[in-house]
Length: 423
Image 1 (cartoon, rainbow, N blue to C red):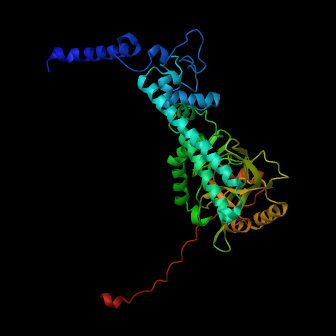
Image 2 (tube, rainbow, N blue to C red):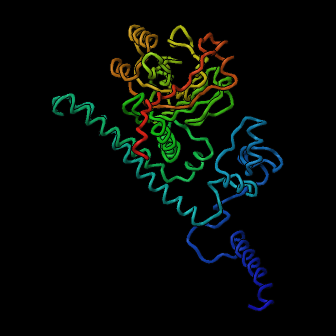
Image 3 (tube, one colour):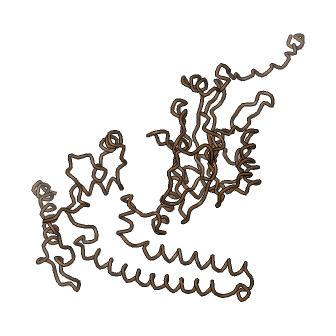
């Protein structure tokens, strides 16, 4: 390639990009088409400001920060998390004041017409399915073949109805935009479905990896299949599954965020267990309950549970005991379990669980006796550090001056061999 061609190639590329941009923004230069004109597709009102428009670039706003340094500064100064993906926030910095539904792209607008027609068809199927459910409920159980058969049929029809609700909105770009921006309403099935899929893609896989690596199954439970996302935080610090937490930080009760992905309100119990308590007499390990609370209401929209804000008289059976480990002992696994029991537990059941917690809590017997269902789990670790002695003293826990040391193996008796054989 000649030197002139090398210098003129970038200029030709720049001119081609400018021509394409003028062709998109200028409706007179576009060719024949069957859809409406560009002015009818997206009418931009410059007189009134758009509430969704990004603020100026110099402001630390969660909608437009795109560099890791500014993201950390935003969280540190305001306590807010960036909204959406980093690619989306970078694009909003230079975007024009156009609503998302009125983007001036012919293919985008034509695709939205097809999606609207498909949604109308799904809505008709939803109405038809509701009529079938109402008709099936009015038919006596004897004509269905029994109450059990009728109940199973209604459950199957209700599941198909929920599936149709998801299929009606799964391809809507506005729905996906609101979900990525964190503005989704968890009362709607589509947003619960998208949140469940997002959780299962990465965060649930990391949790299951920690559960298998640290042998929570089968040391604590025989089987665990989490269906609810559990997040744990001490103050502003979000604890990832398997992290080591300093004893000074874990001295205060944490805050949980329990996100369920199916509709309806339910009651759960929260249990925090340490299965790595050394037992010198048996040369093994015992379990110790650090927190126990029952009859806690949660729903897809009510997810935050502060362990320090639960009323002790009605729901807390065992208050928060700071995680602790003696010097020389291996790290302790602090497992937080969420057990679902549908309705409120009776007073007799609560007293039975409280006695179990005082005498040494064994989760397998607790699940089997009181018909509890494990739906969520979180895990962090603690070990001896410089602040552990002070934490144990303030909590009234004995054993801060105790140190575990590994017992040296006894040497085998040495038998002196006859030296004559080596002469």
